[in-house]
Length: 514
Image (tube, rainbow, N blue to C red):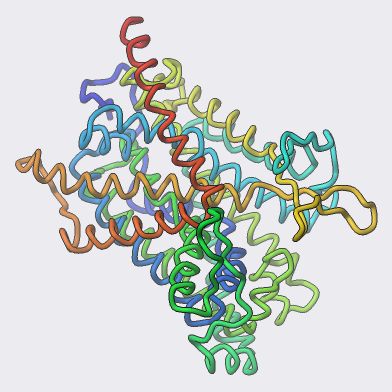
Protein backbone atom coordinates (compact mmCIF):
# COMPACT_ATOMS: atom_id res chain seq x y z
CA UNK A 1 0.00 0.00 0.00
CA UNK A 2 2.92 2.38 0.50
CA UNK A 3 3.56 4.84 -2.27
CA UNK A 4 6.85 5.23 -4.03
CA UNK A 5 7.58 8.83 -4.87
CA UNK A 6 9.13 10.04 -8.11
CA UNK A 7 12.65 9.84 -6.78
CA UNK A 8 12.19 6.22 -5.75
CA UNK A 9 12.34 6.69 -1.96
CA UNK A 10 9.51 5.60 0.31
CA UNK A 11 7.08 8.43 0.84
CA UNK A 12 5.95 9.82 4.17
CA UNK A 13 2.32 9.35 3.16
CA UNK A 14 0.29 6.63 1.59
CA UNK A 15 -1.96 6.39 -1.40
CA UNK A 16 -4.77 3.86 -1.32
CA UNK A 17 -4.36 1.26 -4.04
CA UNK A 18 -8.04 1.14 -4.84
CA UNK A 19 -8.14 1.05 -8.66
CA UNK A 20 -8.60 -2.32 -10.30
CA UNK A 21 -8.50 -3.07 -14.04
CA UNK A 22 -12.13 -2.03 -14.59
CA UNK A 23 -11.68 1.20 -12.61
CA UNK A 24 -8.50 2.02 -14.52
CA UNK A 25 -10.18 1.35 -17.86
CA UNK A 26 -13.05 3.61 -16.84
CA UNK A 27 -10.57 6.39 -16.09
CA UNK A 28 -8.95 5.99 -19.52
CA UNK A 29 -12.24 5.90 -21.44
CA UNK A 30 -14.02 8.42 -19.25
CA UNK A 31 -11.22 10.98 -19.48
CA UNK A 32 -11.28 10.70 -23.27
CA UNK A 33 -15.02 10.97 -23.92
CA UNK A 34 -16.17 14.54 -23.33
CA UNK A 35 -18.06 16.84 -25.66
CA UNK A 36 -15.81 16.62 -28.71
CA UNK A 37 -17.37 13.58 -30.38
CA UNK A 38 -20.75 15.35 -30.36
CA UNK A 39 -19.43 18.62 -31.84
CA UNK A 40 -16.10 18.61 -33.69
CA UNK A 41 -17.19 16.55 -36.71
CA UNK A 42 -18.87 19.71 -38.07
CA UNK A 43 -15.56 21.57 -38.23
CA UNK A 44 -13.75 18.50 -39.59
CA UNK A 45 -16.39 18.13 -42.32
CA UNK A 46 -16.01 21.80 -43.27
CA UNK A 47 -12.28 21.33 -43.62
CA UNK A 48 -12.13 18.03 -45.54
CA UNK A 49 -15.54 18.16 -47.23
CA UNK A 50 -16.52 14.51 -47.72
CA UNK A 51 -17.70 11.44 -45.87
CA UNK A 52 -14.60 9.45 -46.74
CA UNK A 53 -12.14 12.05 -45.51
CA UNK A 54 -14.20 12.68 -42.39
CA UNK A 55 -13.99 9.01 -41.44
CA UNK A 56 -10.32 8.84 -42.36
CA UNK A 57 -9.50 11.77 -40.07
CA UNK A 58 -11.07 9.88 -37.17
CA UNK A 59 -9.42 6.61 -38.23
CA UNK A 60 -5.94 8.18 -38.32
CA UNK A 61 -6.53 9.79 -34.93
CA UNK A 62 -7.66 6.41 -33.62
CA UNK A 63 -4.59 4.64 -35.01
CA UNK A 64 -2.23 7.24 -33.51
CA UNK A 65 -4.02 7.08 -30.17
CA UNK A 66 -3.87 3.30 -29.98
CA UNK A 67 -0.19 3.22 -30.99
CA UNK A 68 0.56 5.85 -28.36
CA UNK A 69 -1.31 3.94 -25.66
CA UNK A 70 0.38 0.64 -26.53
CA UNK A 71 3.76 2.40 -26.45
CA UNK A 72 3.09 4.06 -23.09
CA UNK A 73 2.25 0.63 -21.71
CA UNK A 74 5.94 -0.28 -21.74
CA UNK A 75 6.87 2.77 -19.69
CA UNK A 76 3.96 2.26 -17.30
CA UNK A 77 4.93 -1.37 -16.65
CA UNK A 78 8.60 -0.40 -16.29
CA UNK A 79 7.97 2.56 -13.93
CA UNK A 80 4.58 2.17 -12.19
CA UNK A 81 5.03 5.32 -10.11
CA UNK A 82 2.73 8.17 -9.18
CA UNK A 83 3.12 10.96 -11.72
CA UNK A 84 3.23 8.68 -14.76
CA UNK A 85 4.30 10.62 -17.84
CA UNK A 86 6.18 13.16 -15.71
CA UNK A 87 8.31 10.32 -14.36
CA UNK A 88 8.89 8.81 -17.82
CA UNK A 89 10.22 12.10 -19.21
CA UNK A 90 12.35 12.73 -16.15
CA UNK A 91 13.91 9.28 -16.32
CA UNK A 92 14.50 9.43 -20.08
CA UNK A 93 15.89 12.96 -20.37
CA UNK A 94 16.48 14.39 -16.90
CA UNK A 95 14.51 16.48 -14.38
CA UNK A 96 14.26 19.57 -16.64
CA UNK A 97 12.14 17.68 -19.18
CA UNK A 98 9.91 16.23 -16.52
CA UNK A 99 9.40 19.70 -15.10
CA UNK A 100 8.60 21.19 -18.53
CA UNK A 101 5.87 18.61 -18.94
CA UNK A 102 4.42 19.21 -15.47
CA UNK A 103 4.65 22.98 -15.96
CA UNK A 104 2.86 22.84 -19.31
CA UNK A 105 0.34 20.36 -18.01
CA UNK A 106 -0.58 22.66 -15.14
CA UNK A 107 -0.74 25.83 -17.25
CA UNK A 108 -2.60 24.51 -20.29
CA UNK A 109 -2.77 20.75 -20.98
CA UNK A 110 -4.78 19.48 -18.01
CA UNK A 111 -6.30 22.71 -16.77
CA UNK A 112 -7.06 23.96 -20.31
CA UNK A 113 -8.83 20.70 -21.08
CA UNK A 114 -10.76 20.89 -17.80
CA UNK A 115 -11.81 24.46 -18.63
CA UNK A 116 -12.84 23.59 -22.20
CA UNK A 117 -14.89 20.59 -21.08
CA UNK A 118 -16.53 22.65 -18.31
CA UNK A 119 -17.51 25.33 -20.84
CA UNK A 120 -19.01 22.61 -23.04
CA UNK A 121 -20.96 21.32 -20.02
CA UNK A 122 -22.33 24.80 -19.37
CA UNK A 123 -23.23 25.34 -23.04
CA UNK A 124 -25.44 22.27 -23.07
CA UNK A 125 -26.85 23.00 -19.63
CA UNK A 126 -28.14 26.17 -21.29
CA UNK A 127 -30.28 24.03 -23.61
CA UNK A 128 -32.23 22.78 -20.58
CA UNK A 129 -31.95 25.96 -18.51
CA UNK A 130 -31.98 29.02 -20.80
CA UNK A 131 -30.91 31.30 -17.94
CA UNK A 132 -27.47 29.68 -18.25
CA UNK A 133 -26.46 31.90 -21.12
CA UNK A 134 -23.20 33.15 -22.66
CA UNK A 135 -24.68 36.66 -22.62
CA UNK A 136 -26.35 36.51 -19.22
CA UNK A 137 -23.79 38.89 -17.78
CA UNK A 138 -22.80 38.90 -14.13
CA UNK A 139 -19.70 40.90 -15.03
CA UNK A 140 -19.99 42.36 -18.57
CA UNK A 141 -17.03 41.87 -20.95
CA UNK A 142 -13.95 43.98 -20.41
CA UNK A 143 -11.91 44.17 -23.61
CA UNK A 144 -8.27 43.32 -23.05
CA UNK A 145 -7.03 43.51 -26.64
CA UNK A 146 -8.33 43.48 -30.21
CA UNK A 147 -8.90 39.72 -29.94
CA UNK A 148 -9.70 38.97 -26.32
CA UNK A 149 -11.90 40.10 -23.46
CA UNK A 150 -12.72 38.84 -19.98
CA UNK A 151 -16.17 38.41 -18.48
CA UNK A 152 -18.35 36.39 -16.17
CA UNK A 153 -21.65 35.17 -17.59
CA UNK A 154 -24.10 32.71 -16.10
CA UNK A 155 -22.66 30.14 -18.52
CA UNK A 156 -19.13 30.79 -17.31
CA UNK A 157 -20.30 30.65 -13.69
CA UNK A 158 -21.90 27.25 -14.33
CA UNK A 159 -18.62 26.01 -15.83
CA UNK A 160 -16.67 27.19 -12.80
CA UNK A 161 -19.17 25.67 -10.37
CA UNK A 162 -18.91 22.23 -11.96
CA UNK A 163 -15.10 22.39 -11.67
CA UNK A 164 -15.40 23.36 -8.01
CA UNK A 165 -17.96 20.63 -7.29
CA UNK A 166 -15.85 17.87 -8.84
CA UNK A 167 -12.74 19.12 -7.07
CA UNK A 168 -14.58 19.01 -3.73
CA UNK A 169 -15.77 15.47 -4.45
CA UNK A 170 -12.25 14.30 -5.25
CA UNK A 171 -10.77 15.80 -2.08
CA UNK A 172 -12.97 13.35 -0.16
CA UNK A 173 -10.98 10.33 -1.29
CA UNK A 174 -10.38 7.93 -4.15
CA UNK A 175 -13.41 5.76 -3.43
CA UNK A 176 -15.91 8.56 -4.10
CA UNK A 177 -14.04 9.86 -7.14
CA UNK A 178 -13.82 6.32 -8.54
CA UNK A 179 -17.54 5.77 -8.00
CA UNK A 180 -18.43 8.96 -9.89
CA UNK A 181 -16.08 7.96 -12.71
CA UNK A 182 -17.48 4.45 -13.09
CA UNK A 183 -21.12 5.57 -13.05
CA UNK A 184 -20.73 8.41 -15.52
CA UNK A 185 -18.40 6.55 -17.88
CA UNK A 186 -20.90 3.67 -18.03
CA UNK A 187 -23.74 6.11 -18.68
CA UNK A 188 -22.00 8.00 -21.48
CA UNK A 189 -20.79 4.79 -23.10
CA UNK A 190 -24.41 3.65 -23.15
CA UNK A 191 -25.41 7.03 -24.65
CA UNK A 192 -22.90 6.65 -27.48
CA UNK A 193 -24.05 3.07 -28.11
CA UNK A 194 -27.64 4.34 -28.31
CA UNK A 195 -26.63 7.10 -30.73
CA UNK A 196 -24.86 4.55 -32.92
CA UNK A 197 -27.82 2.17 -32.85
CA UNK A 198 -30.24 4.95 -33.79
CA UNK A 199 -28.16 5.87 -36.82
CA UNK A 200 -27.25 2.41 -38.05
CA UNK A 201 -30.40 0.45 -37.19
CA UNK A 202 -33.39 2.71 -36.54
CA UNK A 203 -33.30 6.07 -38.31
CA UNK A 204 -31.16 5.42 -41.37
CA UNK A 205 -31.80 8.13 -43.98
CA UNK A 206 -31.56 6.60 -47.47
CA UNK A 207 -31.09 10.00 -49.12
CA UNK A 208 -28.23 10.92 -46.77
CA UNK A 209 -26.55 7.54 -47.25
CA UNK A 210 -26.78 7.89 -51.04
CA UNK A 211 -25.41 11.46 -51.02
CA UNK A 212 -22.55 10.67 -48.64
CA UNK A 213 -21.39 7.42 -50.16
CA UNK A 214 -21.83 8.35 -53.84
CA UNK A 215 -19.18 11.06 -53.64
CA UNK A 216 -17.35 9.36 -50.81
CA UNK A 217 -13.94 10.98 -51.44
CA UNK A 218 -15.01 14.16 -53.26
CA UNK A 219 -14.61 17.31 -51.11
CA UNK A 220 -17.52 19.73 -51.37
CA UNK A 221 -18.20 23.16 -49.86
CA UNK A 222 -14.90 23.19 -47.99
CA UNK A 223 -13.67 25.99 -45.75
CA UNK A 224 -10.42 27.60 -46.95
CA UNK A 225 -7.46 27.08 -44.63
CA UNK A 226 -6.02 30.56 -44.23
CA UNK A 227 -2.51 30.52 -42.74
CA UNK A 228 -1.50 32.95 -40.03
CA UNK A 229 1.86 33.43 -41.78
CA UNK A 230 1.61 35.94 -44.64
CA UNK A 231 4.13 34.16 -46.88
CA UNK A 232 1.95 31.05 -47.06
CA UNK A 233 -1.02 30.89 -49.41
CA UNK A 234 -4.59 29.99 -48.51
CA UNK A 235 -5.45 26.40 -49.45
CA UNK A 236 -8.54 24.22 -49.58
CA UNK A 237 -9.17 20.48 -49.59
CA UNK A 238 -10.06 20.74 -53.29
CA UNK A 239 -6.37 20.34 -54.26
CA UNK A 240 -3.79 17.71 -53.38
CA UNK A 241 -1.55 19.81 -51.11
CA UNK A 242 -4.57 21.67 -49.75
CA UNK A 243 -6.22 18.37 -48.85
CA UNK A 244 -3.07 17.31 -46.99
CA UNK A 245 -3.02 20.59 -45.01
CA UNK A 246 -6.77 20.42 -44.32
CA UNK A 247 -6.41 16.80 -43.17
CA UNK A 248 -3.68 17.75 -40.69
CA UNK A 249 -5.53 20.82 -39.41
CA UNK A 250 -8.71 18.74 -39.04
CA UNK A 251 -6.83 16.48 -36.62
CA UNK A 252 -7.12 19.20 -33.97
CA UNK A 253 -10.75 18.35 -33.24
CA UNK A 254 -10.43 14.58 -33.38
CA UNK A 255 -7.19 14.56 -31.38
CA UNK A 256 -8.65 16.85 -28.72
CA UNK A 257 -11.57 14.44 -28.44
CA UNK A 258 -9.08 11.60 -27.93
CA UNK A 259 -6.48 13.03 -25.54
CA UNK A 260 -6.15 12.32 -21.81
CA UNK A 261 -5.89 8.52 -22.20
CA UNK A 262 -2.53 8.82 -20.40
CA UNK A 263 -4.27 10.12 -17.26
CA UNK A 264 -4.27 6.67 -15.67
CA UNK A 265 -0.46 6.72 -15.57
CA UNK A 266 -0.62 9.74 -13.24
CA UNK A 267 -2.47 7.66 -10.66
CA UNK A 268 -0.16 4.63 -10.89
CA UNK A 269 0.38 4.76 -7.11
CA UNK A 270 -3.31 3.95 -6.64
CA UNK A 271 -3.61 1.10 -9.16
CA UNK A 272 -3.62 -2.53 -8.01
CA UNK A 273 -1.02 -4.62 -9.85
CA UNK A 274 0.02 -1.56 -11.90
CA UNK A 275 2.55 -3.41 -14.07
CA UNK A 276 -0.31 -5.50 -15.45
CA UNK A 277 -3.37 -3.30 -15.10
CA UNK A 278 -2.09 0.01 -16.48
CA UNK A 279 -0.99 -1.39 -19.88
CA UNK A 280 -4.22 -3.41 -20.13
CA UNK A 281 -6.40 -0.43 -19.20
CA UNK A 282 -4.63 1.73 -21.80
CA UNK A 283 -5.39 -0.86 -24.47
CA UNK A 284 -9.00 -1.60 -23.51
CA UNK A 285 -9.91 2.01 -22.75
CA UNK A 286 -8.49 3.54 -25.93
CA UNK A 287 -9.73 0.64 -28.06
CA UNK A 288 -13.28 1.06 -26.75
CA UNK A 289 -13.33 4.82 -27.34
CA UNK A 290 -11.81 4.61 -30.83
CA UNK A 291 -14.44 2.07 -31.88
CA UNK A 292 -17.26 4.22 -30.46
CA UNK A 293 -15.94 7.37 -32.17
CA UNK A 294 -15.69 5.75 -35.59
CA UNK A 295 -19.14 4.19 -35.33
CA UNK A 296 -20.64 7.47 -34.08
CA UNK A 297 -19.38 9.22 -37.21
CA UNK A 298 -20.77 6.46 -39.41
CA UNK A 299 -24.07 7.01 -37.59
CA UNK A 300 -23.93 10.74 -38.39
CA UNK A 301 -23.38 9.91 -42.06
CA UNK A 302 -26.34 7.54 -42.04
CA UNK A 303 -28.60 10.27 -40.63
CA UNK A 304 -27.29 13.48 -42.22
CA UNK A 305 -25.75 14.44 -45.58
CA UNK A 306 -22.29 15.99 -45.26
CA UNK A 307 -23.57 19.50 -45.99
CA UNK A 308 -25.90 19.31 -42.97
CA UNK A 309 -23.03 18.06 -40.81
CA UNK A 310 -20.97 21.02 -42.00
CA UNK A 311 -23.71 23.50 -41.14
CA UNK A 312 -25.14 21.97 -37.99
CA UNK A 313 -26.41 24.74 -35.70
CA UNK A 314 -23.68 25.72 -33.23
CA UNK A 315 -21.74 22.67 -34.55
CA UNK A 316 -24.06 20.33 -32.61
CA UNK A 317 -23.83 17.44 -35.05
CA UNK A 318 -25.20 14.82 -32.67
CA UNK A 319 -28.20 17.01 -31.89
CA UNK A 320 -28.94 17.56 -35.59
CA UNK A 321 -28.65 13.82 -36.20
CA UNK A 322 -31.00 12.86 -33.35
CA UNK A 323 -33.50 15.52 -34.45
CA UNK A 324 -34.03 13.58 -37.68
CA UNK A 325 -35.49 10.73 -35.62
CA UNK A 326 -36.90 12.49 -32.54
CA UNK A 327 -38.10 15.75 -34.01
CA UNK A 328 -38.34 18.48 -31.39
CA UNK A 329 -36.80 16.35 -28.63
CA UNK A 330 -33.33 15.88 -30.08
CA UNK A 331 -31.83 18.97 -28.45
CA UNK A 332 -32.95 17.95 -24.97
CA UNK A 333 -31.92 14.30 -25.43
CA UNK A 334 -28.42 15.20 -26.58
CA UNK A 335 -28.07 17.92 -23.96
CA UNK A 336 -28.62 15.32 -21.22
CA UNK A 337 -26.18 12.90 -22.91
CA UNK A 338 -23.49 15.56 -23.22
CA UNK A 339 -23.99 16.79 -19.66
CA UNK A 340 -23.37 13.23 -18.45
CA UNK A 341 -20.39 12.87 -20.77
CA UNK A 342 -18.65 16.13 -19.87
CA UNK A 343 -19.31 15.72 -16.13
CA UNK A 344 -17.69 12.28 -16.16
CA UNK A 345 -14.83 13.45 -18.38
CA UNK A 346 -13.92 16.29 -16.06
CA UNK A 347 -14.09 14.03 -13.03
CA UNK A 348 -11.38 11.81 -14.52
CA UNK A 349 -9.22 14.78 -15.51
CA UNK A 350 -9.53 16.42 -12.10
CA UNK A 351 -8.97 13.16 -10.20
CA UNK A 352 -5.71 12.28 -11.99
CA UNK A 353 -4.14 15.67 -12.74
CA UNK A 354 -3.20 16.54 -9.16
CA UNK A 355 -1.08 13.37 -8.94
CA UNK A 356 1.45 14.91 -11.34
CA UNK A 357 1.81 18.02 -9.18
CA UNK A 358 2.28 15.69 -6.21
CA UNK A 359 5.17 13.91 -7.94
CA UNK A 360 6.75 17.23 -8.95
CA UNK A 361 6.51 18.55 -5.39
CA UNK A 362 8.20 15.40 -4.08
CA UNK A 363 11.08 16.31 -6.40
CA UNK A 364 11.04 19.87 -4.96
CA UNK A 365 9.84 21.21 -8.32
CA UNK A 366 6.39 22.44 -7.38
CA UNK A 367 4.65 24.03 -4.40
CA UNK A 368 5.50 22.05 -1.29
CA UNK A 369 1.88 21.74 -0.16
CA UNK A 370 0.93 19.84 -3.33
CA UNK A 371 3.30 17.06 -2.27
CA UNK A 372 1.22 16.10 0.74
CA UNK A 373 -1.84 13.86 1.04
CA UNK A 374 -4.81 14.77 3.22
CA UNK A 375 -6.57 12.50 5.69
CA UNK A 376 -8.46 10.93 2.76
CA UNK A 377 -5.15 9.94 1.11
CA UNK A 378 -5.43 12.33 -1.85
CA UNK A 379 -3.35 15.42 -2.82
CA UNK A 380 -5.98 17.97 -1.80
CA UNK A 381 -3.75 21.04 -2.19
CA UNK A 382 -2.93 20.03 -5.74
CA UNK A 383 -6.61 19.52 -6.48
CA UNK A 384 -7.49 22.98 -5.14
CA UNK A 385 -4.67 24.71 -7.04
CA UNK A 386 -5.71 22.95 -10.25
CA UNK A 387 -9.31 24.04 -9.62
CA UNK A 388 -8.33 27.69 -9.19
CA UNK A 389 -6.29 27.88 -12.39
CA UNK A 390 -8.79 25.94 -14.52
CA UNK A 391 -11.54 28.26 -13.27
CA UNK A 392 -9.53 31.32 -14.30
CA UNK A 393 -9.13 29.84 -17.80
CA UNK A 394 -12.93 29.86 -18.14
CA UNK A 395 -13.08 33.66 -17.88
CA UNK A 396 -11.39 34.88 -21.12
CA UNK A 397 -13.57 35.41 -24.21
CA UNK A 398 -12.79 35.92 -27.89
CA UNK A 399 -13.97 39.12 -29.62
CA UNK A 400 -15.80 38.01 -32.74
CA UNK A 401 -15.08 39.86 -36.00
CA UNK A 402 -16.64 40.00 -39.46
CA UNK A 403 -14.87 39.43 -42.78
CA UNK A 404 -13.53 43.00 -42.81
CA UNK A 405 -12.02 42.62 -39.35
CA UNK A 406 -14.57 44.89 -37.65
CA UNK A 407 -16.20 43.78 -34.37
CA UNK A 408 -19.24 41.58 -35.01
CA UNK A 409 -22.43 43.17 -33.67
CA UNK A 410 -25.69 41.57 -32.59
CA UNK A 411 -28.23 42.43 -35.34
CA UNK A 412 -30.94 43.23 -32.78
CA UNK A 413 -29.16 44.76 -29.80
CA UNK A 414 -26.21 46.14 -31.81
CA UNK A 415 -23.91 45.07 -28.99
CA UNK A 416 -20.52 43.48 -29.63
CA UNK A 417 -20.62 39.69 -29.81
CA UNK A 418 -18.19 37.43 -27.97
CA UNK A 419 -17.19 33.80 -28.38
CA UNK A 420 -15.61 31.46 -25.88
CA UNK A 421 -12.11 30.04 -25.92
CA UNK A 422 -13.26 26.48 -26.73
CA UNK A 423 -11.69 26.34 -30.22
CA UNK A 424 -8.57 28.21 -29.12
CA UNK A 425 -8.12 25.91 -26.15
CA UNK A 426 -8.31 22.98 -28.57
CA UNK A 427 -5.37 24.39 -30.55
CA UNK A 428 -3.36 25.26 -27.43
CA UNK A 429 -3.93 21.89 -25.80
CA UNK A 430 -3.46 19.68 -28.87
CA UNK A 431 -0.18 21.26 -29.92
CA UNK A 432 1.27 21.22 -26.40
CA UNK A 433 0.16 17.67 -25.68
CA UNK A 434 1.53 16.38 -29.00
CA UNK A 435 4.98 17.76 -28.14
CA UNK A 436 5.12 15.63 -25.01
CA UNK A 437 3.47 12.58 -26.57
CA UNK A 438 6.26 12.57 -29.16
CA UNK A 439 9.01 13.16 -26.59
CA UNK A 440 7.65 10.40 -24.34
CA UNK A 441 7.53 7.85 -27.14
CA UNK A 442 11.05 8.83 -28.23
CA UNK A 443 11.90 8.15 -24.59
CA UNK A 444 11.14 4.46 -25.17
CA UNK A 445 14.01 4.35 -27.68
CA UNK A 446 16.25 6.30 -25.27
CA UNK A 447 15.53 4.03 -22.31
CA UNK A 448 15.97 0.87 -24.40
CA UNK A 449 19.51 2.12 -25.04
CA UNK A 450 20.38 3.60 -21.63
CA UNK A 451 18.63 0.95 -19.51
CA UNK A 452 18.69 -2.23 -21.56
CA UNK A 453 18.49 -4.48 -18.50
CA UNK A 454 15.56 -2.77 -16.81
CA UNK A 455 12.59 -4.98 -15.98
CA UNK A 456 9.98 -4.60 -18.75
CA UNK A 457 6.97 -6.83 -17.99
CA UNK A 458 5.36 -5.46 -21.14
CA UNK A 459 7.15 -4.23 -24.28
CA UNK A 460 5.70 -1.74 -26.75
CA UNK A 461 3.68 -3.55 -29.42
CA UNK A 462 5.24 -3.24 -32.88
CA UNK A 463 8.49 -1.70 -31.61
CA UNK A 464 10.32 -0.01 -33.29
CA UNK A 465 8.06 0.43 -36.34
CA UNK A 466 4.77 1.51 -34.74
CA UNK A 467 6.30 3.97 -32.23
CA UNK A 468 8.33 5.46 -35.10
CA UNK A 469 5.15 5.86 -37.17
CA UNK A 470 3.56 7.72 -34.27
CA UNK A 471 6.56 10.03 -33.92
CA UNK A 472 6.59 10.89 -37.63
CA UNK A 473 2.81 11.27 -37.94
CA UNK A 474 2.42 13.47 -34.86
CA UNK A 475 5.43 15.58 -35.85
CA UNK A 476 3.96 16.26 -39.30
CA UNK A 477 0.66 17.35 -37.75
CA UNK A 478 2.52 19.68 -35.36
CA UNK A 479 4.49 21.23 -38.22
CA UNK A 480 1.36 21.94 -40.25
CA UNK A 481 -0.39 23.41 -37.19
CA UNK A 482 2.61 25.60 -36.46
CA UNK A 483 2.52 26.96 -40.03
CA UNK A 484 -1.22 27.28 -40.55
CA UNK A 485 -2.50 27.83 -37.00
CA UNK A 486 0.42 29.90 -35.80
CA UNK A 487 -1.53 32.34 -33.60
CA UNK A 488 -2.94 29.56 -31.45
CA UNK A 489 -0.04 27.09 -31.53
CA UNK A 490 3.03 29.23 -30.92
CA UNK A 491 1.68 30.26 -27.48
CA UNK A 492 1.70 26.56 -26.57
CA UNK A 493 5.34 26.31 -27.62
CA UNK A 494 6.19 29.50 -25.70
CA UNK A 495 4.54 28.10 -22.57
CA UNK A 496 6.80 25.04 -22.80
CA UNK A 497 9.92 27.15 -23.37
CA UNK A 498 9.01 29.60 -20.61
CA UNK A 499 9.36 26.70 -18.20
CA UNK A 500 13.13 26.56 -18.77
CA UNK A 501 14.04 29.68 -16.75
CA UNK A 502 11.33 28.85 -14.22
CA UNK A 503 12.96 25.45 -13.67
CA UNK A 504 16.37 26.97 -12.98
CA UNK A 505 14.90 29.64 -10.71
CA UNK A 506 12.73 27.18 -8.81
CA UNK A 507 15.22 24.36 -8.39
CA UNK A 508 17.90 26.22 -6.36
CA UNK A 509 15.29 27.96 -4.19
CA UNK A 510 13.63 24.67 -3.34
CA UNK A 511 16.91 22.88 -2.86
CA UNK A 512 18.17 25.55 -0.46
CA UNK A 513 14.99 25.50 1.58
CA UNK A 514 15.43 21.89 2.61
